[in-house]
Length: 233
Image (tube, rainbow, N blue to C red; front, side):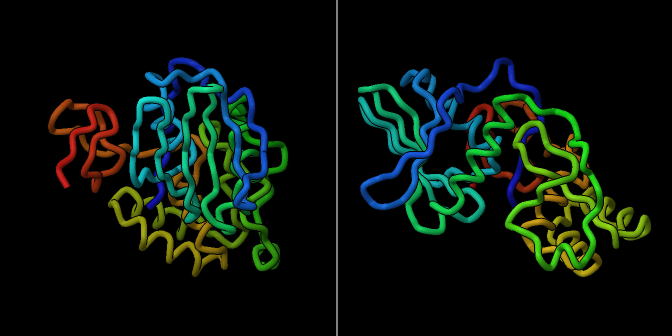
């Protein structure tokens, strides 16, 4: 399941560009920053992955270019660093990933601007609205770390919601996702967004401490520490 780090960063992430540019492949790229050094890239990439619920699939580091393969919302991307001129960009590897770029840009704008409050329009979605819903919610409580709206559902009863929170606390996210979809009629993507946030924009349950450094893992099922990078797969 996709994950999210809700902790406050020590300083703002470098996201001064956020410009969508075409590539020779016909796919889109999102230029992120021109202020990240070669030495800073690894930590920057980890932070960006946390903010976008991304999975890092591979890391290729050369003397002047660094290219990491990441997956965001099912789309495959290259997260690339070039040292001349200095730039960090997120490059779509498929048509499907290219379609995600505008939404990723929108989410990162929110991260850059530090939007931490719920939007004025937090009306719950009806089942009829959910049948015509877009790829992502456009109202609800906005997560200040990833920029995603956490939707509210008109047909989610207090009893069912309480059960969903219990399932999430018991590390049964998949069961909670299925039950939420059955109760509300929402899509799999929307159900995952709700479950990831435990139904609240500011919520996140961290995993147990790393057996090597003692800092919290992303989830109870994590097999690699994002802090010390110890791996016990």
